[in-house]
Image (cartoon, rainbow, N blue to C red):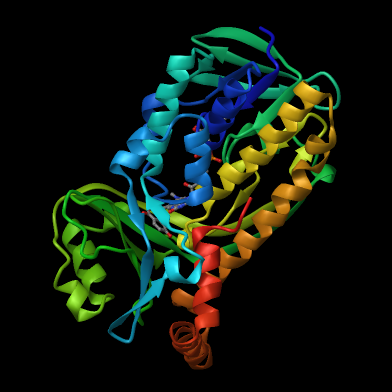
Length: 389
Ligand code: RFL
Ligand code: PHB
């Protein structure tokens, strides 16, 4: 098989890139290791920046998002048994975020792709990338049959554990990493959310987050030890711990119910530089990871594929290589700002075992300053709603 762009991975980056290329008439094939059902079973991000929503609108994939997504104008920061509202809208020149699950974004993009008819090879085994310097191709086995896809470019959209980044020569890239000494235990339940807006709570027992998927479905997280396992937490233990970490007025509104999903996610910051090698371009989690505290991972995947699609479109339409040559630099400039913000949110709101009494007082001062300073709230708001791209 021959195509113009081989896209590795059918997560949000791969599917959105495929949609942007389809819209520009650039032939592409997506190769995905798992089944579509498995990709849709992963409960992950929930908060979309306006720029991400605009991209989904541009590819004609935002009808359900506009019908079911929840537009939020603020978030709450909780500490010292009080809620402190940050007016995102007022502090960002009228911008908002939309709460709409990654699962739904992925489902909508999969349906769009099925309608356009561009090929996706699911359950592809042994995916390998070759000829990155000059004549790239991808090999794989699907339903036991070996296949080879020759292409002009490869987009590595296969997440943190994918094959793309691993096919780079070790001396071609530099990586930057921080692993946090804790994780998030997440729980999804069909109960109405405790609050209209998201609550990020800093508590001596650890961080907690109240999020949602709809007026009848809640998504909650609590900070846990890095090695803890979800199976060790009963639903009751989760609800008890969550309530303990929230201001009393909120804890009273938390409605418990059986979990639909419970899992532990490690927290990590990670960046690969550059995001390109020869004809391979890395996008999304394949290239960088942010801790989820800033709600930036999926949104960075969207800005990456926006930059890459612009470069590819200029290459095919205008024979201009400028966009592709600038891809890594443009994307990394935004990635590092999101890394900084996600690190700051994580550092400000979590308990760090090593920080000690001095660190705890500093953290409290940071929070007191945040909720009393327009400049500090403006910094949070501008980053949370998303820097421009
Ligand atoms: P994905 O979603 O990991 O998709 C990669 C796809 O590639 C496939 N794959 C392969 N395919 C072929 N060959 C191989 N060798 C392959 N290896 C892997 C995989 O099966 C998969 O289908 O990466 P992508 O597309 O870059 O998307 C990134 C986002 O998923 C991620 O950044 C976000 O989920 C991060 N994130 C959040 N981001 C936000 O913007 N807002 C949030 O509120 C938010 N909350 C979160 C999050 C991530 C979390 N976890 C679990 C890490 C909350 C959590 C708890
Ligand atoms: C979520 O709803 O899953 C979510 C929301 C905000 C975050 C992280 C995750 O910062």
